[in-house]
Each structure stands twice: as structure tokens, then as C-alpha cells.
Image 1 (spheres, rainbow, N blue to C red):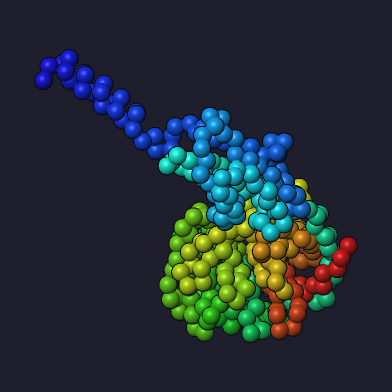
Image 2 (cartoon, rainbow, N blue to C red):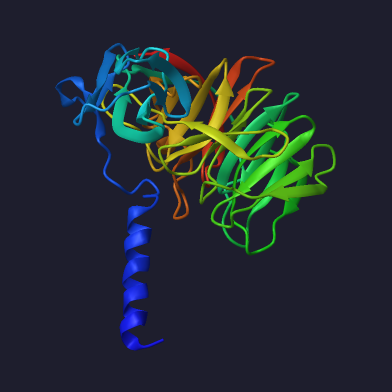
Length: 351
């Protein structure tokens, strides 16, 4: 084959490929138009949108989705009116699939949904205090059957512990290998689940003897921060705006909520605790604990723990508030921090 014919074949191949399937890259004749070009909403508002049909093509039907949730299909219609009160908060995607003339076009718009109320602000009263190992870099804290369990971090010092609250006595303990930085923990169905920070690995232990039963990866998230559970599902923070919802059998990250108040979406939520149907989460390097609705991510309250760190022994290794434990049998709440020598029993008071 001479050079001219070779060039001709090459040119025709490009032309044929270009005229074939556009694999979704061709600019659509449709677009989503949100009323007033609004991109930020309060959860008490209504989102109104329409499909703009620039070339007046015949539309067979339109399917609308909010995130992955199918919210409306309209035969021979192109309008949407969506009440947001039952939707997830945070950064969301409005999607429309337009079926027209034996083709389909997928359209998206990014929006932000905020809560409609400011969080209720709380402070605290100290009811009691108990000894805590001053060398323990607390990452996770949880009660089970009245006994306290702790995950402590730092490379070369990470451990899992079973503690007696009143005395601080260590009832059981195992050390993690030096390459792991331990993070949050939670207990469900006779298992202890413990995260590591950047090692993309969580561990599963037998509750009774701390024997390691397995491990799990993080799938969609890159780091491990905090864990809690509601008896059915496990919740996991990773330092981003997301709290992941894990399948309790496979530990796969199935979905997520985004903790959001009336002004913005929160990030760096760390230690998690399930308290009376809500998620309590402290913000890394802050004195605040957010009270989060697990259904939609709304931050309904903020507990200000300012001044609590001043009530422990001051030393060079003293670090931030981190460690929330709720004893469901007694209804009592406890907090501590990294390298604090006390665990505090606290009462939450509306400010």
C-alpha cells in the first residue's frame, strides 16, 4: 500500500470514528435550567427546574434523580418541582435523563443544600472525673456492657485497650505493629472494629479475648478517623466532609451523609459516638462536638467544651479533645483527650 492510500485510510478511519457513537462527549441539545440559576438551597425550600430543549426535539420522557435517588419520571413533560425537606444535605447532584428520538442524554447540575436552622448551642457541667493514662493518645472511646474500650494512636505506640473506668486499670491490651497508626473503634455483634489512619486498613477483633479475626479495606475513602454504630449500621469518618455508612457484614462503604448546618458543610469530624439516635462528633483540633442527624446530615447542635483541657495536668505532650463515650445503661456521657490524665463525666446544658 502506497503512502497516499495509507493516508486516505487513516483519514477515513478518523472520520468514521468521529461520526459514530459520541460516548456521551457530544454536546447535548438539552440542559437543566434551575429557576433563577439558584445553586444553593435551604432544606425548607423547593427546587424548581426545567429541561431546556434548544432544538425542539421530541422528548419521550424525562427521569430525574437527586444523587442516586430516583425522584420523578414525567411522560412528555420536562418540569420538576422538588421539596427538599426529605433530601440529604450537603453537596448534591441533580440529574436528568432525557429520552428522545431513540436516544438518551444525561444532564447534571451541582447544588448545595443547607439546613434551615442554626445549631442549638450547648455547654457542659462536670459531674465527675476519673483517672486516664496520660501517655494514651486517645483516638476512639466506647462503652460496651458497662466496660470502657479505647483505641490509642501514634506509630509504634498504637494499642487497643479494655479499661475499668473508676480506676483506669487496664483489663486487657494488645499492641499494633509499628507501621499502623490506630484510630477510632466501635463494637457490634461481638466484634471490635478498629481503624488505622493512612494504612487503608481496619481490623476486626473478638470482643472477649482481642484475638484478631480479620481486616477490611476502605474502598472509597482514603483515611480512617472515627467509628460508631447504631446497632445495625456502622458510621465512619475520614477527615473529609463525609461520614460513610458501612455494611456491618462486609464493611463496604455503601453511602454517606455530609454534616451540614445553616451556613456550610463541616469537615475534619473525628471521633464518633452514637448517643440517643444522634451522632456526636468532635472536630479535630477544636473544642466543639457536633450533634448530627444521621438521616440527612443536619448538624442540630454544637457542644462547646472550651476550658475542659485546662482542667487536666499540663505537659509538653498534651493534645486536643478527642474521645466521646456514652454509657447507654446509665445514660452518662464521658469525654477525654489525647494524653489527658482524666476522663470527665459531663452533663450537657443548653446555653
